[in-house]
Length: 190
Image (tube, rainbow, N blue to C red; front, top):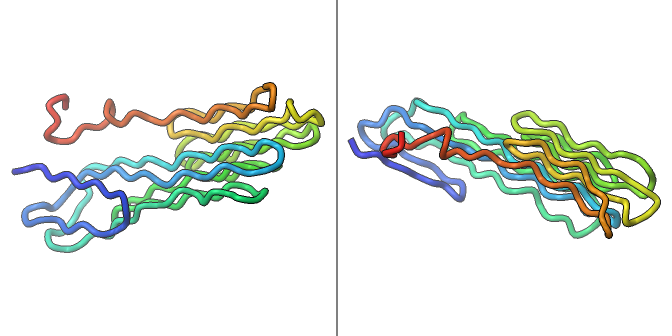
């Protein structure tokens, strides 16, 4: 039997061909956008990554595919937007949390980073349901010491904001390498 691969970059549907009653899927949620503020905003969190094998399908019956969008960019001072969930039928991957803007990061699949503040307040990163939490942002009355936290990744938590000449942000959390964990059935490395 031939192996069929289908990669979706936009929403739609997939109709299993005759003889196909199960499939393997990888679903990735949309990432959260970063916060915007006159002080450094926090980075957006990564979307969840879900891998499921032997998902039951019915030949000839379409399966709904939803590709989640990333959080909307911010053009005024406000927290970042949470990314949208992606799905293949009932297999769903949540979107990442938005970054904070002079406030805490939003929760999501991976948490958004905390924004900085004009006082010595620490802004916490958002919590995570599938990945890692966002890093903390820290505040200061001195602009060069204000820093936003990095967004959480699918594989590692976001970094805490670091001091810099103009208030550098924290590093974003790392993703995960699916190639070492999952193989296509026809992949010779499997």
